[in-house]
Image (cartoon, rainbow, N blue to C red; front, side, top):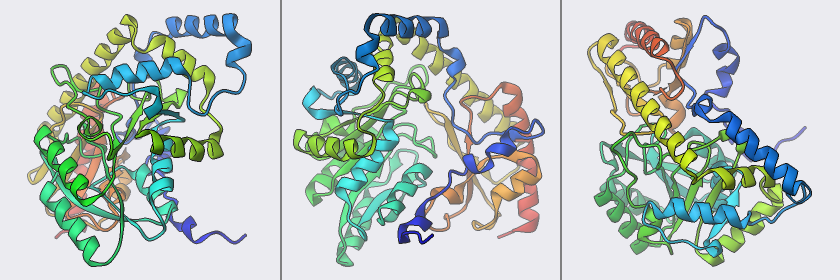
Length: 400
């Protein structure tokens, strides 16, 4: 069978590629950034589901609107208000997860050969979408305050000098996957100004905004700073259930209408039952209590990972200190950036996400992503201990 040219850009997830190994009890996995669904009130959700089907089963099990249900749009409006955005149903589109939002934004905004600018490192799942639509990824560095505005200006200048078009800037502004960094408020304002001045749309992928650790509240969304120039993506995966596969997009009405048409050609509409369950639960006092439990749990696990790294990591290893989310980014001195870090980790029965997977080209240094969100203290300790051995192996085999 002959494949389209774009087929070679379909990137397997580095986590799913080693899924079978992760099931082997000999292995320790710090790769998957999974929400802790064990903390959900399962009986309460079961009762909500039963009540919905008992009272409105024929309606809920029928086809629905491609825009999503109105009750869920109200819930989304309340969530976005916590980040300073005022949205109506005319600006909202419910999607089958925020991953679908990345696909729809790229389908609508990018022609083959266009450039997408993003953080370096960036989300692997987005990179696969960019490649599938034959867009070229240019990455800009991040530091402790998120993406660097001056580097953004320089990247846009370079693309312009080449006579090429920028489809959009892709950014994960809160607790970024994979670096764990958060774009500061000052930089948010700078990034929005740069892109508005240069006519570059922003796709703001913000699934981690509400899972900051206790004491860390979400900053103003980029959408709230410039609704006319930003497509905002949100998700219920991190604040409720990834298995529901429900997210949303916020965009100017004329853009949102085109996104809906594009979405209906793929999935017709998101699951009505999943939307109804979410609308009945998210925003309630029980959900608020659950979100608080999640935030406390993730904060404790992250600190456990940071403590374990401090105890076991050799000299010349650095890591980010997140204020929320699921991930820590580790940078290793003395190792060739092109080294097969995942292969070395597997030899030590450890699974991580190699930094190379998060860059379009070789990373500037040897690096990797660690997830803490669903691991026990014992797993985090053992994972850090094995990582120290992996680093020693890499320094011997692939010095720089």
